[in-house]
Length: 117
Image (cartoon, rainbow, N blue to C red; front, top):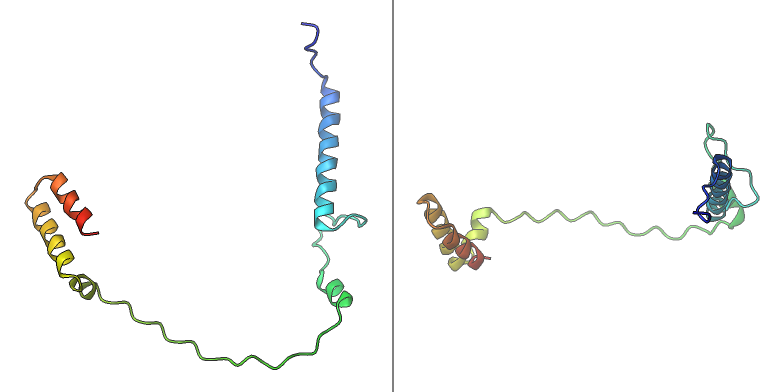
């Protein structure tokens, strides 16, 4: 077919290089490095703190915030205490345990577990 010409390897490489340059330019714009030289790969980037401090005047320190001691965490209720709070749920769960030990119908056990939710 005359309209399906394959691009040459050189054209593909040039297109790939152009895309890489476009992506790098977008990344520089997003990082705010438009007119600046990108950092060298082996060298860590220069700290931005100095630039930010020079740009913004220092505000006088305010009064320190009052610090309260952290409240001790509330103990979690014991498992048995949580189970025994609801008598109906406890009864259903005991039935589930007994029926599962007796190898009862799985459908019945699942239905009881659904009711215990």
